[in-house]
Amino acid sequence: MSDTINQRIALYRKMANLTQTEAAERMGMKYSTYSQMERKGNISAERLRALSEILGVKPEILLYGQEGKQNKELNFSAEKTEISNTLRQPSVLAENTPSFAPAPFVPNRKEENILKILRNLPKEDYDEVIALINKKYKASKTR
Image 1 (cartoon, rainbow, N blue to C red):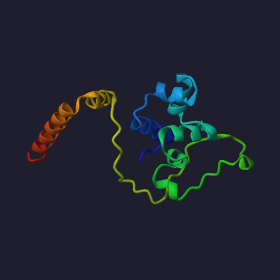
Image 2: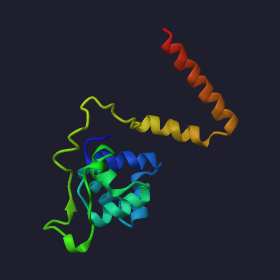
Image 3: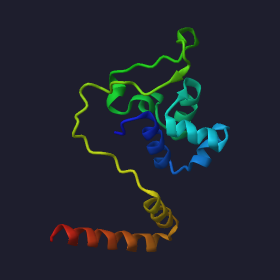
């Protein structure tokens, strides 16, 4: 999984097929505010909760990642508010996270555009393109 909270937010936003602008609109904030939040990784508990609902993941997954969710418990109750209401990247991820874990696929802008084009193709054309990609992939594996 991604190393920092801002990388995880960007990853799950992309997985939800949302742009930063769309995510900002759904959260009821300006694009620049959302962009800064995603870049720096500083997010309040309230915004983390709202963003997790929009992206369809639990807040602890955004905060700690898949590996850390078993070891960390979040309590968003108002009685346990700490000095700072801003949640930051934990200094240590789960101790049992292997250092050789494969990085998740995060498409670059060009790949995102290709995926958007594929999603908008008619089913027959989509199936034809996927078959061609699979054929080329298998051919490259036999070399």
